[in-house]
Image (cartoon, rainbow, N blue to C red; front, side):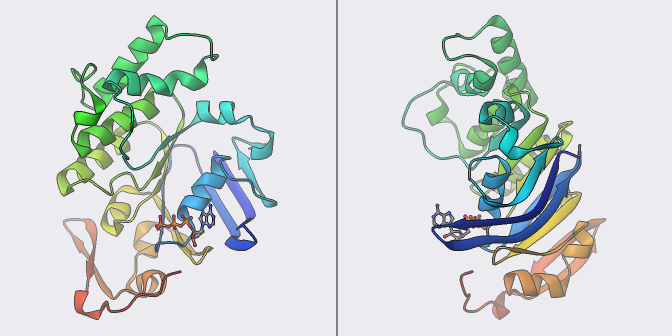
Length: 260
Ligand SMILES: Nc1ncnc2c1ncn2[C@@H]1O[C@H](COP(=O)(O)OP(=O)(O)OP(=O)(O)O)[C@@H](O)[C@H]1O
């Protein structure tokens, strides 16, 4: 078991954000976390990466309570990929990917030949061979997202944490990104807004509503008409097309939404 979250409660400024969360992630699993805006998905990921303190409940990471882990050691085991946001500095692609080696070095150490070899290997893995010297800022959104994935791979972590990684990508780049991730021999925990991507790439889904886990299970047991109505207040049809679970939104029935 990589993660075992028990009775986790998180409050920020006295506001309860997560309530009684119980969740497990096994080695090699691709776990999706879904829920409406503001339901607590990113907060849960932050708590699991020790980026956010919590007072109630326990999070075991690789068998050891998270509080006992040094942040630096967690970064060696857990690599985080968020949405692309524009960076102020004009790094090259290789410089970006080499940042993934930071947890393996002391602050005074510069990159070794090994670091460069690992970074170039990571670029090859995300199909960006030949991009090392290009400026990150000049890449397309899809290319940038793959560079961020390469940076995570250069970390050589066993567990990838993805926070809405495909949000700004076009359909082809979303699918290509998810295919790349699925082929990696890693444990993946991903917050995903696109329910069809979540349904077809994840082994297991946890669904949050207003900071509580309201259902979990294999995609076909979570993504039912009734559950999606409860989680998102959206009417859908759910069907199988060519062995893929497909969620079809009934657009005219989505009217006003209440923020969670
Ligand atoms: N640092 C913070 N200070 C105060 N409130 C916060 C903070 N971080 C998150 N929240 C609140 O916690 C709730 C959950 O936020 P979170 O970002 O975890 O939701 P989310 O499910 O990831 O949302 P989204 O899908 O919109 O990214 C929201 O009401 C948010 O306003």
